[in-house]
Length: 149
Image (cartoon, rainbow, N blue to C red):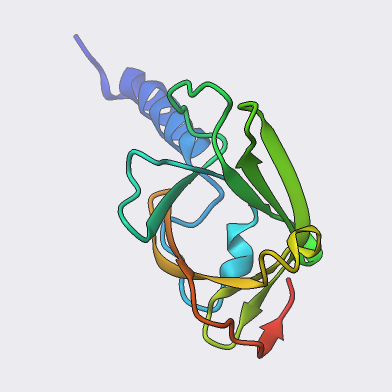
């Protein structure tokens, strides 16, 4: 016979397991809170379309890709690192800064790529369940910065 007292510890352990699996990252991101995206994000080319780039946190179980995956890291105090695949198949880190603009976009500055590559903006299209979708804007970036995390 199955008593209600014997089911309580099992139910408690189940709830404890669910709590341990919960991420400390939000599932959806309200506008104006881009600092909550801090961490390393890696590109999912198989989920990216045209001008929409899709990323997941580096803790996601990715399929193996020779040479690694391009991506970026948003750090505290406006620190930004972009990871590009170089011609030999490895990753190259380019350091710079990021800030949130008054339009809720990420303004990225990479001093070592100038003048060939000026500052650019990333527009947040969607953030749901750990999947981040961005669009790199081609027009001149907005220069009004509201805050640096």
